Each structure stands twice: as structure tokens, then as C-alpha cells.
Amino acid sequence: MRTRLLPLLTVLLAAVLLALGIPLAGSLAAARQQQVVVDRIDDTARFAALAQFVTDGPSGSRRTTVDERRETLRRELDSYYGVYGIRAGVFYRNGSAMANAPGDWFVPPTGEVRQAFDEALLSRRSHDPPQAWPWQRSRLVVASPVIRDGDVVAVVVTDSPTGQLRSRILRGWLLIGAGEIAAMLLAVGAALRLTGWVLRPVRVLDATTHDIATGRLKSRVAAAGGPPELRRLARSFNEMADNVEAVLEQQRAFVADASHQLRNPLSALLLRIELLALELPEDNAEIASVRTEGKRLAQVLDDLLDLALAEHAEADLQLADIGALTEERVAAWAPAARSRGVHLTGDCPPTTAWADPIALSSALDALIDNAVKFTPEDGTVEVTVSTDGDVSTVVVTDTGPGLTDEELTRVGDRFWRSGRHQNVKGSGLGLSISRALLAAGGGSIDYAHHEPQGLRVTVTVPRYGRGPEDPAAAS
Image (cartoon, rainbow, N blue to C red):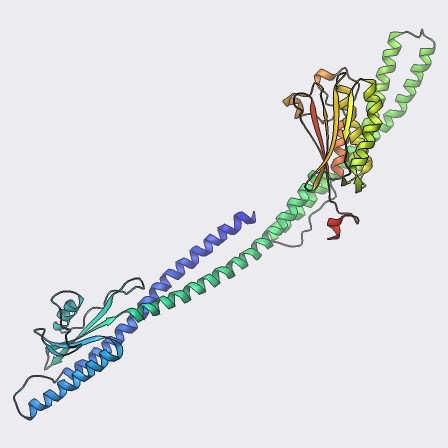
């Protein structure tokens, strides 16, 4: 869930930061340019003050004064251009130069400089130039009128390069970007902690649900962290698990008590049948049928009691050599297989796993018994032990009639038997008992087709548990 929730939060945070960062970057660029424009306006105002009384006049002392002022203005413009690299000039209304720097710079007939010059002739400062962006090579043109006696007698024009301005804007953007990246990293870290805090109870609930589904009904959720809603959910889940465990316990107790209580009168009934058989001919078919059905009923009661005990008892998990254990069960069933003309083979290398040896032995007995029982004469039953990652497997295959796809979905259900095998001895509880015994220790049984024919049964047990001898537990 975190892998889905975290990208969503990251995208939302990125969208918020971009929504804040883009306007901030635009405002920064506008502020940087406005600062430069204000400086240029101050410069043009200063030059306009110098040029205000520089006019052509009669010869004499007045002419000398005008020339001195024009020379002072020219020196100021030259110094300004030399220091800042900004072209500047004072131009009469007809476009001729009063003073300019560099000397070959004039007002062109078209362009931004001409537009600013024409606006200043109307006795107002030129409009702010267009925004300069770091990827554009543009210039800033500012023009101010020189007014004398209420009339515009000349115009001061500055034409500034934008290299330094664009560099300052770019540096500001880099700072904003660095700040956004830092904020993003901080937000992602906070989101990680937040999602971990929110999802930790969900993971615990998921693990506990899996434990209960696999038969560990004592598992409960510790409602100690997370949002209040999840803590309430954990408490409700524990109450539900308590109720389910109580109902199952009542069901198991009923089955065990019923099996036990029925066993005594059934034993007495079978004894009376045996006594009655002594008074009748030995080949009496009715007595033989009653005796067979009575023994079958007794076997069903024993299996029900075993199933109730298997579902109730805790598994005695320990590190066991399932290769040696499987090889022992194969050897034990070899005489029965030979008596039926079935070839029983085993490939059981030494393999350790975390299992209850008694439960695993009982499950293997049931599986090998079924395989031998349903395999025809000259057929083959193979038992193979192997490891696959964190689990060890015991695979039992046979060359019997196998099961259909529909039957595979029901095999292992209580009292279920294939309609083709109703005449074969059994109660239909053996595989259910095996599944319950293995599930108590974290194992499982899977059924599949065996090619070209037959059934393939796979017993899976974990290689690592939580006991004191388990290396995973020690780590």
C-alpha cells in the first residue's frame, strides 16, 4: 500500500511546490528587473539635469558656459559607458546628438530605442521594457525627457545589456529550486514517516489475519499505534477473532465429545454383534455386513476425534531432517506397496525444515496410503524431497486415475470422496486431518495433475521458524 500511497503524496507535494515556486520565480525576475529599471531611471534623471541648460546660444561667455556644460555631460556619459558598458546619450528632438557614448551611437529609425525616444518626446517617461528572461538575449531601454520652460528640448536614452540581470535572475531561480528540492526531500521524509505510522497497524492487521487464516487462532493485533480509526479497527478485529475462536472451540469440543460418547455404545454394540455371530452360522452374510458397517462407523468416529484433536492441538515445531523422516515413511509403506504390486520409490536427500515430526509423519502416511491405494498394479508412486528458497517440499506422485479439475477443488474437504472411489475403504477425513496437522505448523498441501496421468501432491513446510534453534530467530 505504501508503494501506491507514497507516489500519490509525492505528486501532490510536487504540484503544490510548483504552484508556489513558479509564481515566486516570476516575481523574483520582475523584482530584479524593476530594480535595474529604477537605477536606469535615476541615471537618466541625473543626465537630464545636466543636459537641461545645455542649449545652443550666442557667442560670448554664455556660449563658453554651454560648451563647458556639454563637455561635462559628455565626460559623464563616457565614464558611465566605460564603467557599466551601458550606452547612453542625450538627443535633441530631431534625433541629433547633444552628447552620446559611444560616439557612434544614435537613435535608430525603428526599434525599441526609437519607441522609447518617441514616448519621451510626449513629455513622459517611456514604458517599462519587456521582462528579460535568462534564456533571452535582450536589452533594457529607458528614456526620460529633458524639460526646459515646460517644453521637451531633448531626450536622455540608456540602452543597457541584460547579461548581469539575467545572471542574477538565474541565481535566484537556482536558490528557489534548491529550496524547493530541500522542501520536497523534507516533505517526502515526513510522508514516509506519516505513511509508516498510518500503515504500520495495517501491516500488523494483515499479518495477524494471515496467521488466523493459516490456523494460528491465538494471534491478536496489538492496538498500540496509528490513527484512532485503525486502533478501533484493531480492537474490533480482536473481538471478532475471540468470537470466532470461541465458536470453533465449541465446535471442536462438540465433535470430540460426540465422538467420545458415541464410541462407548458403539463398542458395546459391536461386542453384542460378535456374541450374536457365535450363535449363527459362520457364513451368515447379514452378520458379516453388520460387522463391516460397525467397524466402518467406529473408524469414522476415530477419525473425527483425530480431526478435532488435530485442529485443537498446538504444533510441536522443531528443526527436523524431513529427508530422513520421509525416507523412513517410504520404507514403512514399502511392504504394503509390494503386496499390491505397486513400485514405491523415494528420493530423500538430507533436508532440514521447521516442522512437527509427528504431524508431518501422519500427513505423509495419509498421502502415501492414498497414492498406493489408488495406483493400479505395476503402477509407480514416487516420493521426492527438495528445497525451494525458504520452504522445503515433499512431492508424492502416482500413476493412478487422478482427479478431474472439479474434484481437485474439493479434495481435502471433510467427508468428501470421489464418486468413482466410493467402494474404496476410507472415511474421507484422512486428508482433512493431514491438512489441519500441517497448517498448525505453517505448512500446506497442494493438489495438481500429474502428467501423463495420476495425482501430484505437494507438502510444503517452512525452512525457518521462530524457535530457539532457528537461525532466523537468532538473527
